[in-house]
Image 1 (cartoon, helix red, strand yellow):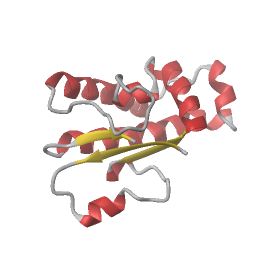
Image 2 (cartoon, rainbow, N blue to C red):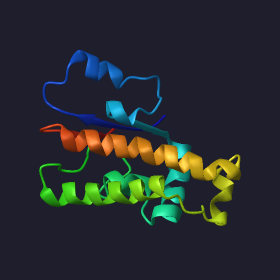
Image 3 (cartoon, helix red, strand yellow):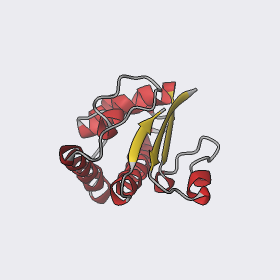
Amino acid sequence: MGLDVYCRWPNMTQEEVDAQYTGFRTTGKAGYLRKSWGGLSAWEKVFKGVFEISWSDMLFPGWDESNDGEGPDLTNPDERTRLLSNREKLQAFVDAPTPVPANLSPYFSDFGEAQETIIEEAKEIIYFIDLALSKSGSEIHFS
């Protein structure tokens, strides 16, 4: 069990829908992010420590921690600006990684790989945001 975050848009092809069902493997390029509840708790703290914003708040600060399909209103220009700003934070880290704070070491089995692990997670969210903002009428659903 966990959190599934989907990007959906009008007139999705069957191929696009199928690409989002990956056996619980995150594929930001296809519009799908997934975290187990335990994994999400860890990523919330890691992102807060590195980016000063939690993993879920990157996508939807109004999330009430339920799986009811809620998500940000992408027709709202302020929401789109917020997502772009968060994307820029992630891209800045990917382009010029900063040291990971030592207090986050408990969240990594190999702290020596923490920076690369965060870079890979950031890339998936960047792909996801890019897709969400590029598709007309798209919606993000936390389910």
